[in-house]
Image (cartoon, rainbow, N blue to C red; front, side):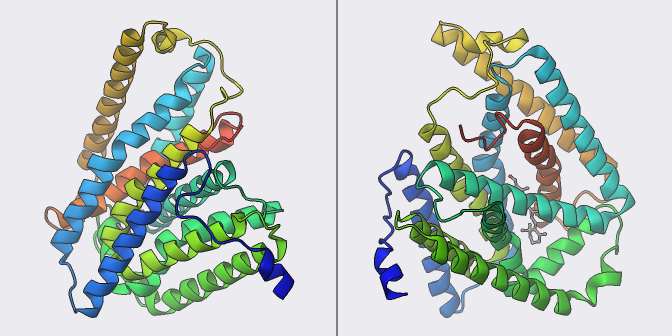
Length: 360
Ligand SMILES: CC1=C(/C=C/C(C)=C/C=C/C(C)=C/C=O)C(C)(C)CCC1
């Protein structure tokens, strides 16, 4: 055992890997927020729901949405027209299916929204690890799944345990958007599920850390993974949930995807020279490329806000019975999960060669 421990190296805040500085930005940001809120909590300070909602909306809309647009842009360029049409078709089908589920069974819809956040955070992070500081300590598909579940699970399971009331209030609001009072029949189980989710998640963290330790080969990937995993758990245990989730996506998820994108310089497989209207993105004239990118992002922006307007019109209570800005947190969380579901499913299962987290 001691010989094994001897082989473990200290993780670097700025790893000497491609994208290392960007990784450091995310680490420092989450660490600083964790320390700040730990101090605030000890001092008895707790931000109001209104303040939390404003921070969430700023983080998710102003900071994070543009990166989502970039991910689609990146997925669709240098593809055949057939691929682009199929991608769009699958995308719209998944969106329609999710919206239908929310109307028919809002609690199942909320569960799916939570699942999407976990899958996006978890699998996104796993791929970042693989391409930056490495994942030599993850030697089986089981371990990779465990790593994704632990990193993504931290985003929802840890707040369920540490901020049960806030979690319950916002969950009820999200269900109320489609069926007022719809969460009431299951609310009595929240005390029990809190412990089940907390205990289950804790067991997964221990399993992930223990297995990784046993399989670690001394490259430092285990220590970096363990330190980041514990940072995520600490962050979500201390920072009030609405602020925590609202800043996690821009400051951690998207920032680290930028590190991954910059770390991979090979042109992905499945690329062709651009086809259809997107061919402009492969022009030799950089001004045309910039104009083309602007056009694609405008089209994406119109589609996104068009869908938000549709959801707002269809939902009986788009703000879940709350006011602005608090109700907007419920609306935006449901909306962003709807558009993220096909992003996760279509962009990684259907699009295996180049999906959103593809690592050549
Ligand atoms: C249930 C619940 C929440 C859910 C948030 C969700 C489901 C966010 C999804 C984000 C996604 C999918 C982002 C993708 O980029 C809140 C607001 C934290 C408040 C506490 C209760």
